[in-house]
Length: 406
Ligand code: PLP
Image (cartoon, rainbow, N blue to C red):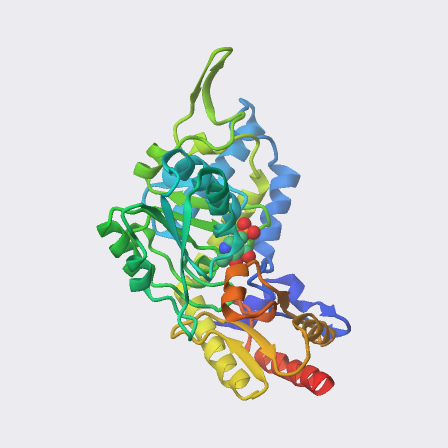
């Protein structure tokens, strides 16, 4: 039985007030709050177990290395992959996708080669490909969402042509909550011999993952959205793709030997991890993943599906609210505008006065905003610790904003 109050008690920040009101934190799509176990892991690492990793022959360095390296196995378990050497640590999804852009795509793409993207990608899964467009003449092929905000996998597959070298799609839209049918896309792309990169930033927070059977090549996740520290993350890269990649950043830790006129590299995944890494961030990320796995990703998904259904019914009752995206099976992410003159930023300011934290803006999804004909929306995004009472609080605050602006 999912005990949301017990879970809430694990997150100290949820007990605080904001603007004299009990905090209702609905900005989880941007970054999630941290459970005490993560805060404790960070404190323990810095106060008792800190040294640089991989380098030392002393006790603390070995201990820090052991704790840090153990997270590779935790991430592999979380993602449902057997080979932990396919996990590259990094600072988050943005870095993971840039690694693939520089390390895999750049050396093998010529002018006129194509990358297929959906229109609902986050800038993290757009701008690295624009670099290739600007610098190498790579063509970006866009697949629109359907009117309900879903992404038709067949349209993605149909966009693949003889010059397509990569399909890069999100597993869950950070704006619409749409969940993409990655398996169907991967099956079609595989048949065409085209690798698939998945932006798993949002999906990894909300659903169990089994990457070994998903059929994709690259899967990027970000730690701070999964209740871990900011500046933590990882990308899973199937070992045959890793073998095709050249390193992206050069420096310490990623080399085997360096001489005046020659250099050789460490074996993957270290080959892709240059310099002193986010040691404590990664240790904290490991604690966060152990925490969600102990609760159970299936249970979290079921709890959030209940929140989503309740929010759909409550928000659906506000006939002046325009919720973007009604794809079947969407996640508990709601972007909306309000009839009348109220700007998303004004709405969010009123909500904040009521202690309700939401996000307002373009949500780093420019092409989607263009497609929707909008410049900004408000976004309420739910997490494992949110409650139906908080949906009510959101609705109450929206009614207040509507009364003020109508
Ligand atoms: N992709 C999606 C779908 C996101 O929502 C985000 C963050 O908002 C990112 C990528 C980028 O993640 P990060 O900033 O942690 O690299």
